Image 1 (cartoon, rainbow, N blue to C red):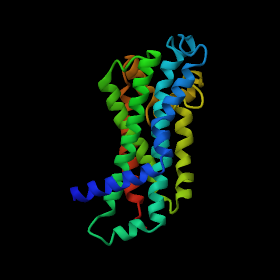
Image 2 (tube, rainbow, N blue to C red):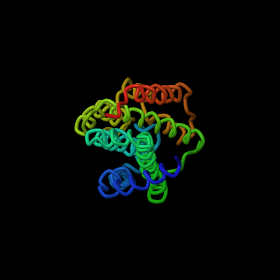
Image 3 (cartoon, rainbow, N blue to C red):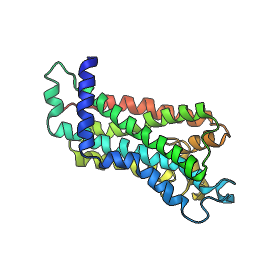
Image 4 (cartoon, rainbow, N blue to C red):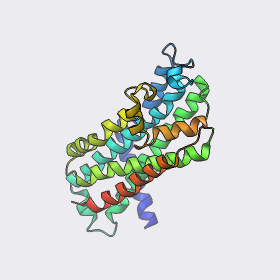
Length: 245
């Protein structure tokens, strides 16, 4: 089983890299936006609207949202639905290699790429704009893990119910657009109305909790509980709805 999974993962990695658009978006797009945002006058200066922090510091968690949302809510639903559409999952079900290996490989590849993009943003932000690394690394790591699982669970729900790649993309948009908005991608979270910021506090992948762990103010347990609920319920729902064909 381990050997079969390793072979499938190797094959899927090669196929994934043949069309590197999503890989480039997950890894490079957040860092490109970081450099672009940092070049805007005033973004590297403390601002009262950003709670006394620099806008560049407050925007890094939103850049993490871009990497996760792109891969979890655009790439993987389309990839899984394409395999269903082409009958790959159905054919695998008739072999000793269970289709779950294919799903596991897809998840491993996409999560790895998203984490690579996040690591690049953290390193580049620190090196170029002196963005401090998280002051509470353990809380940051816990929030990130929960946020990753919760976001990918939503992507798997879209993959579970869509019969075609186009349909999967459309279904995933139901979660993609709100997560990008409430995560501060379209407009910095400090500039959002209070009620919208509070809603965003409890949505995957946990932008506010990541920010709180980053600056050292402490993550609210209720925010972690909300992420955990999204992760558990989303994964359970995806498993219940999933069809191999």
